[in-house]
Image 1 (spheres, rainbow, N blue to C red):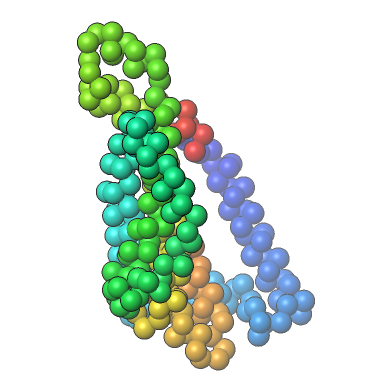
Image 2: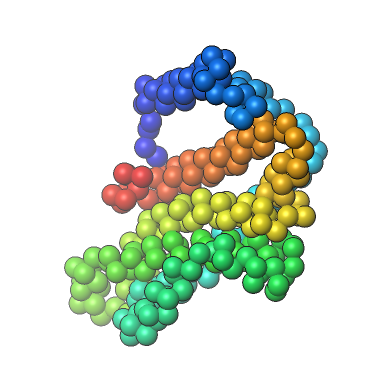
Length: 259
């Protein structure tokens, strides 16, 4: 795992603190109406108190369950499909037009269809999130297979190894860092789409539904922004953990060293 110098961490923390201080000063000086955007200190205070509310904890856990479920389903489907497409040129040619047709579809456009199919349940948000984050995993898997070192492949074949052995011992290990990058990208997309689906549907138990209920009451801007901060904390934590795991597992690969 790559070591992060303390000075780098300190500069990042200092930059965040400076931005918060500027926001606080802008509010206190009257440049920003606190009724429109509350003081930074008020938002931070609300951020720290929200976990003490049982309803918010339930919403947080529900969103995390849907988020992780959607990501897991995407990985379970997209990786095998990507391996088949990346390893077999004929399959790549046959499926290419279909993938290019489906990939530009905005995931949020599928929310009404998912509501009709599953109703306002966790399965609806999970399905939309799985669709959304399947694409980065699929694309990175295909790219990883295509980036297989041809010299290593020719060497394996010279020693009499067939396509399955080359795929297992050369192509898949080489594609693993690419797949890990796809999962890291998909994790952020899954969180965004999960909360969006909850916002759109309403009536559920996730952060999105909780935000709708909070927004229905006047003077709850600081509460809403506190919940938004928690959504950012979840995304940041997932990205840091996945990045650290990728560097530890694939430290030998250049893509891990620059992530």
